[in-house]
Image (cartoon, rainbow, N blue to C red; front, side, top):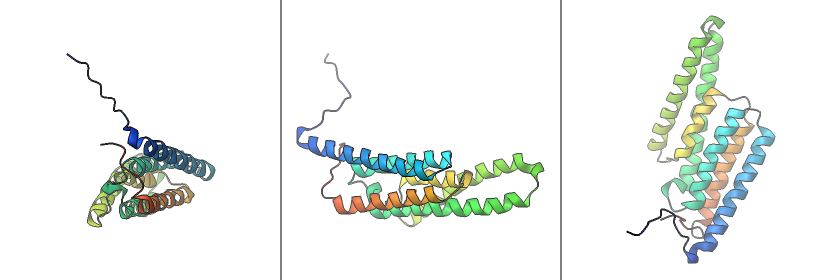
Length: 179
């Protein structure tokens, strides 16, 4: 019985696309990481923001023909996640300051539940506005839990806009690398 492998061979006609698109993704991610490390003091926001953006970069550069790579979905998904996360965080900060220190442990549970609800609301709004972008959904969670400054949020949104521009202007030049 012949031995089968799950490794995929790169089609020689697509080799240059493979090299170019992955190289472009690596360079963009390195630039984003540089900006985030230079401007962010929140390790949680930095890590989740970088993780979400890495997933989005993967989609744009390896699956550029997918629905998740559409500019409207990239910008809309991240915009909604940031908006809901920040609004929820601000609301909870006012609520948190209104209660005494005696209830801090219980209030941490409020932050966890609120983070999950913020993600759910973000998902609902992404569906309503037809701008589903799965990597963006997690951003709303971390914004509720830990936001110390807004520069990382700006980097995340600007990177989403840059990815949308790349997707829009290079859609005919980039090919799906899998499939």
